[in-house]
Image (cartoon, rainbow, N blue to C red):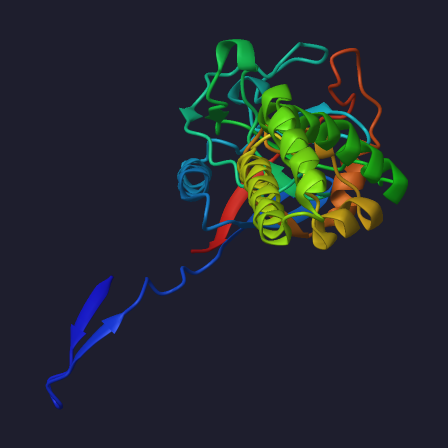
Length: 283
């Protein structure tokens, strides 16, 4: 919270939060055309390091060395700058930073993200900002997205239900229901109380289940905007929550498609080199 003092009227004014940061934009120049990207302010570690490396010329002269159609185009590795034809590249010195994975930033077409080492050696999903990749992806059928959600979410829901709706708790509810039926006609007042007791216990179970479900980080939730992006533009859903997306292409989507369409060798390197130069347009 920032506090300001009004000299004229002697009233303390409190400004809640900070003024919205200006959005950083950059241009990724290639011999097949240019892409303009914007960097997200809520991934400041990635944004600031990307800007720092771009200004230092780290990415300049490197290649889009890993190109997989309907998946990603990846570049920026320092060992690609002077790589001879056919050489396996992408093993330049990494620059590792903490992950900033946000559920609202997903792998739609044009997403700008940082690669990383696999989970077995990188438990915290730390990023290698010395490189970057841009998503081309593919378009999804709505029914396919429904199936993807169910395949992940249904087992999670069932596990949570088993956790709370145990045989012991089921027995308690069953006993209360039986007692309720016995007393229903002879003891109306007791019947009402027992009915309330059953409802209260059932509600408590439901609340526990709902709390665990809402807090579970592994479930898939696709709001309408995300679903529409994957259906109409394309993307790669299975990378979500695994890698940090820190920006997106806002101009030059056709360049992504041009690069992704290039013939490649056995290492997914384009036969025709695609060189990179990154310039920061605004901060």
